[in-house]
Length: 346
Image (cartoon, rainbow, N blue to C red):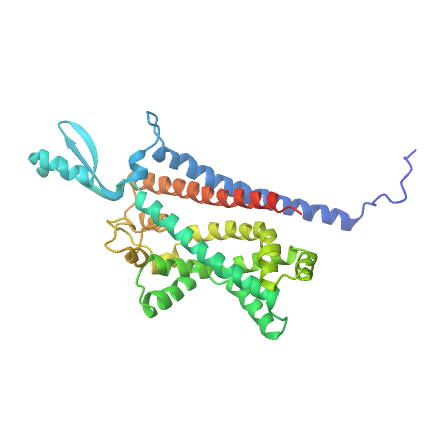
């Protein structure tokens, strides 16, 4: 005998079988995307770690992390094949005049390190996120706490959503026309900061609005009932509880800002710069100078020079360091968010 069927037991039908197949397809697509992403990540880690780490002490390629990019020179000297960066090769020729007559092969950007690129990337990310969070949170407070829901405000929200889908190259051209040419800031940190901040602003505003909406109205009403002003209520009773969600938007913003090449190509990045950002004659010059950056360096080394085994190790080493820096900055935001969430848990 067949076991008794429960009254509310789901019956097998064509629609349910179809739903299972669709669910299996979605699951396969998700795992496939994750597998491809993991494959790319592991490939960068495997090849990049060979450049950043060494088998002997101190086990870290200090020169790669602390020096500027240089050209690589290959030549034979006294029966041995030698590899030297530009500075070392010039010193070697000065000590051995006969080396000037030795046939050499040179490979641009294949020696030295990426320290100026690391500094430029960190400065661009931090500066743009400070501007984006300041403007984005202020705009979200106005839209949620002060603005009346009318046609104009709905139009503003629609415009913000549309800006989130604008390609980064368009923001780069906008920053070039507005900040570099019209404001006369030239290719500089300041132009790069504002261009990247405007690019990530829709994400920050949208996430900040949702975080402010999530704060219960009772917090506002209780504060106002005790005699606090509107701004005191927002500052003391709303913002502290919305900060974890706002910092979540900063994590998303960091991931996008740090990896963009097109906007900084027009507004902030140099292929090569001899001086570090703080090596200026006057403190105000710090904001009006261009910098090197990791994503732009990867772009140049990967596409603008002849490819060989020496440029490959620089490419993957730079990409590996770039991933670590983005992960560290994002982790710092996550830790800060979790601390605030525990502190203001209601």
